[in-house]
Amino acid sequence: MANNPMPTQRIAFISVHGCPLARPGSKDTGGMSVYVHQLAQTLGQLGFLVDIYTRVHDSHDPMLVNLDENVRVIHVRAGPVRAPKNDLFRYLPRFIAQVKAYQEKHHLRYALVHTHYWLSGWVGQALAGEWGVPHVTTFHTLAEVKARARAGEKESAARSASERQVAASADRIIVSTAHERGALQRLYDADEEKVRVVHPGVDLGLFKPGDQQAARVQLGLNGHHTLLYVGRLDPIKGLEVLLHTLASMDTPRAVQLLVAGGSKRDEEYRRLKGVARKLDVQCKVEFLGSLDHTLLPLYYQAADVCVVPSYYESFGLVALEAMACGTPVVASRVPGLEAIVGDNRSGYLVAWHCPDAFADRLEVLLANDALRASMGREAHAMAQDMSWDRAARAVAEVYAELGILALS
Image 1 (cartoon, rainbow, N blue to C red):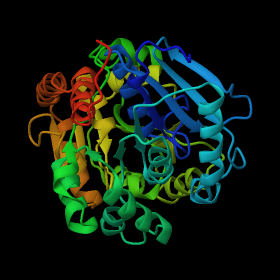
Image 2: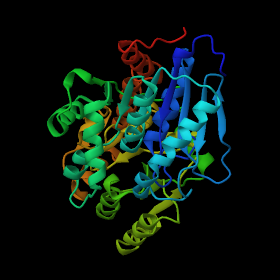
Image 3: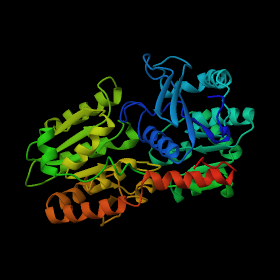
Image 4: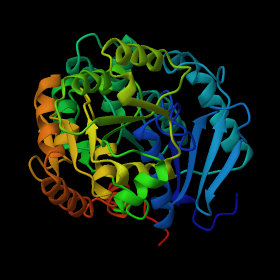
């Protein structure tokens, strides 16, 4: 490892809490983990050497996991394995020390540090300074935007302060949408010259249309109309709105809702099950828990509609995955989803987090097979322009601005 012919091409990804090997939909693991995994692998295919540093999330994790010949995951022990995300800030100095120890032991030279989320940004700021290399950051979500998206959302003072500090010090900030760029400038006084918009991608080889009936048979689904929710069980994701929507819907055929995400161990999982019972829709809802990422296409293909009722999304990867599978999407009209879902083309955007508003759009789609099919085709066509190869090449262009070029 120490004899790399072109060591200046080695990139250090920092993803403190979001391990790219963790199952999406489990607690504190969502689209960011998919983003880090897919971006790193595609950058590896472009010729970069990428090391992803992340916390140990399972006591059985090996320290080193090779994703392919150019990309590897390095697990760092920093604090209790099961420490909740909100407690991780106190363990960041330990995380930094462990990364430096690994880097020095293996004589690794990094050309650039790319961090993901504010915790990682705090770490990357220190490491990039010590190594004398550029720091590129991707926040994925921002505390100040999140607080304005839903009443009751609270984040630590350390988070907002750290985001502001990292935004000021980073050499480049990669955001998913023009709205996020504007929020950084408006709420964090970020230098617009440092901000670059790069839309994330979707794995078009994995997420693609399939035979709906065959998928339904394989999953053992009945003849009901099927709605699908995919994601973490977090209040900001709006699943409770969808449960109320299900209770208010009036359709000729019965409707079932599949919920892919969460775990019986999670407090929010238990709370939402209670909400379903209170609304008397528990017989219409199946909580599947978090699913292996490779199984998700089958569920998207089997569903009639994918519903994304989030209060805030920096970028709605779930909506894009559903569209790539040819499944229409009904989503909240929030900036991260407006950038993906074509209203009245690939589905509908709902302006209010109101069950009746969601029910109205869903009832229209479920009542019209031809409309669902047409929107599904348009959704698939729109997703074809959003591959991970395109996204990775755009990120590579940002690296090139800082003098970092791929091997090939």
